[in-house]
Picture 1 (cartoon, one colour):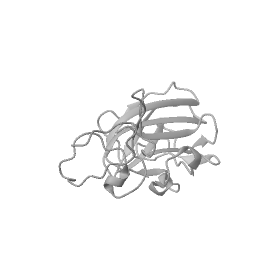
Picture 2 (cartoon, rainbow, N blue to C red):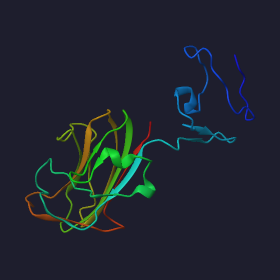
Picture 3 (cartoon, one colour):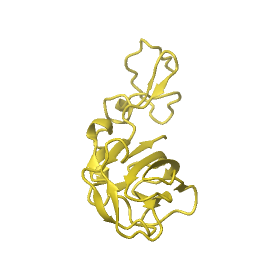
Length: 186
C-alpha cells in the first residue's frame, strides 16, 4: 500500500489488478496526462472529458420542421470551446454527433428560426426516443431547451426543432441564439 499526498508526483503500480483509491494520471493507462484533478479544496475537474459546441455558419433553408426525424444541421464546430478531437465525432454535413463514450450527457440547444417553435427533442440513431427526450421551448422564434440523457458509444445524436405543418422552414445562423452544446457528465 502506498499513501499518496499532494507532494507525491508519481506512483508506479506494480500490481495493476489490485489498485485501490483514485488514479488521476493516464500514465496508469499508458498515456501521460492528467485525466482528473482534485484540488486542495476538493473540487474535481475532468479537463479532457468530452464536450463540444456547434452552431450554424449561414442559414439552413428548406428545413422540414414538421417531420419527427430531420435534424438541424449544425455545420460548424467551435473548436476553441470543444474538447481536443471532438470534431472528429461530429458530421457537419448531417448535423449528427457520433457518441464517443458511453455515459450521461447534458445537451443544450438554442435556436433562432423563422417559425414559432412548438417543441424540440433529441434524435438518437435516426428516431425520437420514447423517454426523457422532449423539451418545450417558449414558442417564439428564439427558444432553447436542455436535456440530460444516457447515450452509448457509437450512437448518433441529432436535435429536432418542431413546427407542425411547416415543411420549408429556416434555421437562422445567429451567434447568440443558434447553437448546441453537448457535455459528457460521466
